[in-house]
Length: 370
Image (cartoon, rainbow, N blue to C red; front, side, top):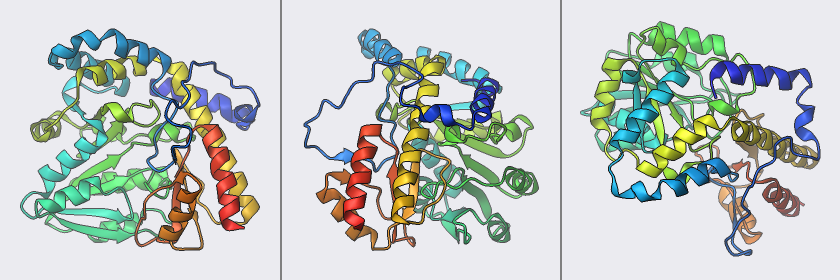
């Protein structure tokens, strides 16, 4: 979905206070497959997946292109690059296709962390880039979140020195779901991108409901030293197919392409191409995610539990007990929740699965906390 379309749609929802999303009848009709695995298998609410995907249109396209499994994906890849470049409003040489955004994160960590390169990041945040870079002897400066569990941009700025190669910002942040003030973020990027490359991980950008919240792709277009990562794993429901992309000015993108190893596959490419055209499923995913979060908030409010208002497809809440104990108790009730996120070891992250799965979670939560 192009950004202008998304903004206008979100503004329309905002006029009704979002209440249309909470009605008993879905505003979109889809053939969404139910779980075909054993009925007693765990409900997986631990990996921030979109359980409604892939969409019917995407599943059909995957089936139609199975015969191309004998072909290398280079020809199809160039078409996907073109579609993404048009969507993001950048030159095709600014796009790097990766095997999920995780490969893009790791490739970037390799390029800028190699041989002792220094990287600044919030703590806790998504670790894929950081842990990978450390295996290549990168030095990571982990800066604690502020009291609101948001990135402390001022403290991160204070860590910049002449050895700093990269500043990693996950926004909205994983695992907290917090969103940076857009003006503060813009000012930070414009003030420090000459000192180090700034990486904006926007895996959850599509779930931001503020219509005019900018992607840092805006700064890439200005020729700044910014890298943006996006993925088809979340709102498009393609986590298992592994396709994502980086956006950067061409000279930076060229370095990143050289570090990409696995890349992606032809079925993932065809799925991503169709997903970009399937605006109805995009809207459906955001709508269902909104409903699921409201259900989780309702349950947490009834129990008097602390939580963070989320700008993602998960909710981070305080359990009041060690996360290991909480996870075990939820697992006994067939619910799998997110892993520990040190140092916040009495907090839990719960993904927004299908609504019936969230109902099961709230029931299990009430039983656990009673």
